[in-house]
Amino acid sequence: MAAATANQTIGPFWHLIEDATWADLTRFGAEGERIVLTGTLFDGTGAIVTDAAIEIWQTSPEVSDRFPGFGRCRTDGSGSFRFTTLKPGPVAGFGNALQAPHVAISIFARGLLKALTTRLYFQDERLNETDPVLSLIEDEAGRRSLIARKISPDTWRLDIRLQGDGETVFMEI
Image 1: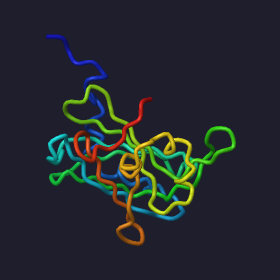
Image 2: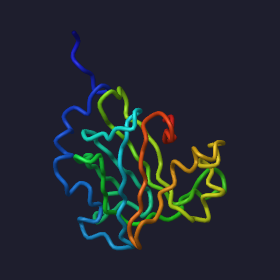
Image 3: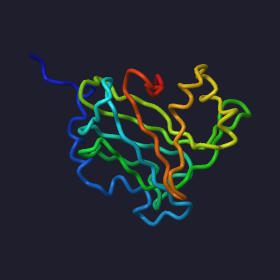
């Protein structure tokens, strides 16, 4: 049996999800509208996934010494993930189009040979209607699978389903 390759495992970086500070993108003193992004990860049967690594990436606000634009955490015993970050703004899209505020998400989990990539958009954001990436998804339910709902003044929730009914839309990169 051959050894697992980098595409088959999160490899030497798994230890980074044990450090909860990686889930706080404001830990270096970033200033702006602080928000919490949370959700639960479900597999194809609807069972929670308790051993996954979730990464988020943002291009807005701009990366700096105070804001890394990147975070990582593990799903806990209830399949939940939680990040503290700054609310993103619109970013340049294709041509003159603006992309709606969003956060890129990567999922590393058992049974996945490559990370799954998706996006989190924010409920009631006017640019969602014209976002050039979100507009590529023809199925209304598929588009809704990327829209986080506001559950408190500073907290947004997006549950992610890897397969089956209500499957989250994943991007090819």
